[in-house]
Image 1 (cartoon, one colour):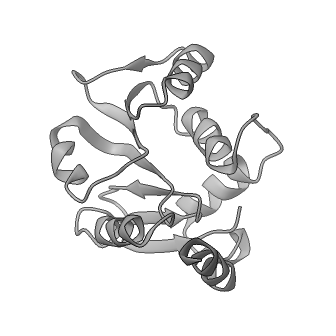
Image 2 (image 1 turned 90 degrees about the horizontal axis):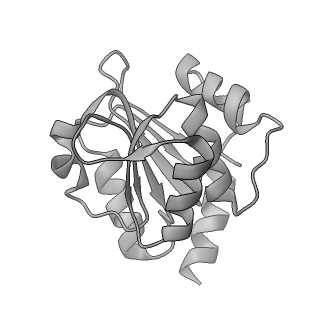
Length: 164
């Protein structure tokens, strides 16, 4: 019931590219998410797989037990999963509130965090809210099935709810 109510709430408050006043997010929506390219898989998988080439992610960290997804990403895009260099993408299917602290030394200005199932339970919604309200996060995009967090020093803090 919680998931369904969150979904209805999201639909009522979310927008598409026409309600976005950030050039960074507008370009991401129009040139990436709403582009005709489709990958096989769920909505969140489609967002993840489209976002990797759009943001030119090369070094990634996949914090998941989904080895099939990890192998697909590494093989399809020729990427490396790494802990030793600066990361372009951090994928989390079970995020915790301290995730930004854990990866502080591993990210750069163009890095992004991809969080799966941000509204599946009340606890995951609370973690999402805490992360997006973190003072380090400047741009957050809530797509209901997943969320993206950016730490872009040149941008003012903004939160977007997007329909996909």
